[in-house]
Image (cartoon, rainbow, N blue to C red):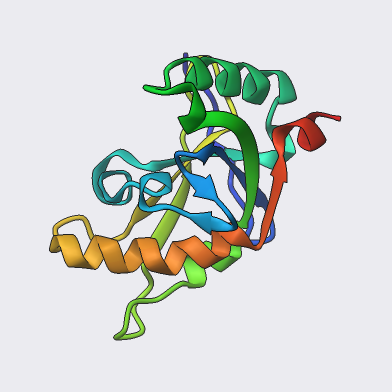
Length: 150
């Protein structure tokens, strides 16, 4: 499907689906909740809130929950809110911007958005540092998917 790309403004909210206890537990986003491979190569999948479909998010939560190795890993789904502007303002220790955010629609989800590190050929420790910069941004607002859908 050829979806038209949307310009994402700095004040646009991006959404990330997280599961307790695999990704998020006791107010902490675990390392599994922000895979370094996603930051480096694949893209950390988000949804652009202004065009996101609640039905798509609900279906994804259901589908991904059923793929858990253990039911306890994905017993509760949550939505984390991230402002694009906060993500692109995150910097490495030298003050260089870490992330870029792009609208990357896919067939079943026109709101799909990707967050990637600008640098894609760094050491593993670089992507761990980037994950640690992203983690508090994702923690600013997290609600249960039940509350999100209501």
